Image (cartoon, rainbow, N blue to C red):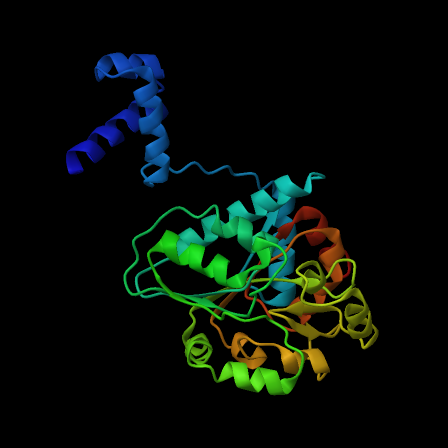
Length: 313
């Protein structure tokens, strides 16, 4: 295995550093050109080669610094905006995956919510062999109409990628009433995961607007359009881990918040590193309110959103 890895490293050096062609490398190592191509691909998969595109302009860096200072954040990563939503989500996810990669260590306990940006992050992470690490689902998600909103599946995929233990919450994020919630949170498997949320080192969360047409809870099928309208009329600006908050980022004492199954709102805010990943101009107000409420320590977003946030400082 070590001999093969050494050969892979030599071939990667020839291609990426010495700028030899695949045909030249094939001749040097007595291999076919397709074999060299496959080895270069495996070099990326094994982490021997990492390709990073530095697309942050001086403008995006300056905007990020303004937001860091204004809201007391540890870090702000601003990605250039794109009209193609799929491409933008992919780039946001890649930035989050790179950040995650830099923070990994043996024994780390990672909390993860669900949503489109987190789906992109998880599926762009490179494999690791962590020791005694854990992936803890932050909120229910079972029964979502789209696999990108299935929190159990997302947490399981991340645990496989990082070779970590897996702690799921296999139930919906919102239930009909508090009686059902009380029954579910005392189910042994769910209770075990909820107890683990108190030892999380870093959490990755999405942010969503509470506008019915933009709400992640509506898109995922956990709330009806009419229910979302009522929550918005009550003054809810956005939600994080299912919990609705007002324009100052305060937790709201409303029915839906008492029916959320997941990490307690106060416990979420006690996690040392809280990374919020959200893009799209429809989320500006929700992100601003979240920053006012000190929900996050790090924000990853796009340039249009960041510019709009800075314009009202």
